[in-house]
Length: 71
Ligand SMILES: [Zn+2]
Image (cartoon, rainbow, N blue to C red; front, side, top):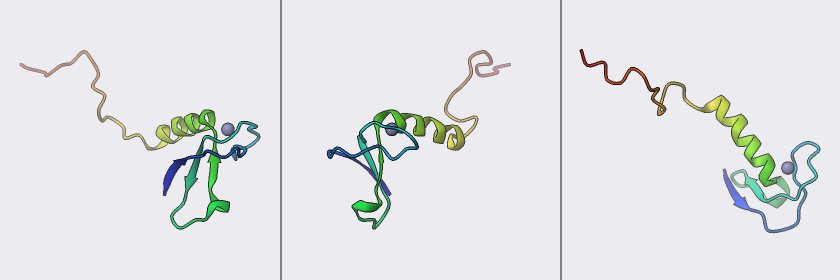
């Protein structure tokens, strides 16, 4: 699956959104009628929603305070 920039004026497929799509989600082997067209606003919301589910917990972000524990 990949995401491509949508240059045609196609309506965003997300729910009741009335924006024009800026991106298309392209499932492997799908033709254009199967693309999921998403505007920038919805893509950002989708990303935030997805990352809330898939972001690994306790990785990357180190909390300040207990640095090192050198004792
Ligand atoms: Zn949208």
